[in-house]
Length: 128
Image (cartoon, rainbow, N blue to C red; front, side, top):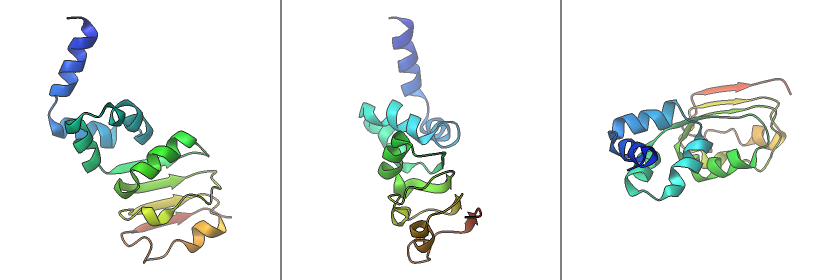
């Protein structure tokens, strides 16, 4: 058995709580999506699907957007910086509690309403 096979075996043997902690606190959402979710490992996907994500989308980034749309209902904190994409559908963020937008667009501003973001607790907007 080579070293790579042994490492894969050890990773899969980690307890669910440790994997969840890694996914939520130490890895970017896009990395979780690309490295683990696409493996189609039922146990790991179940852990990922139970995670809460805190993400920062620094600019128009297609990879962030793909992971964003796939895990939108699991995102609890979102920071958008230098971002002017009106295609970002905030209504999918049903569990969002913290939102920070730098230079929000008109469409983003009008979508920040209690009926669209019912769990929103903290909102920060930079000057337009």
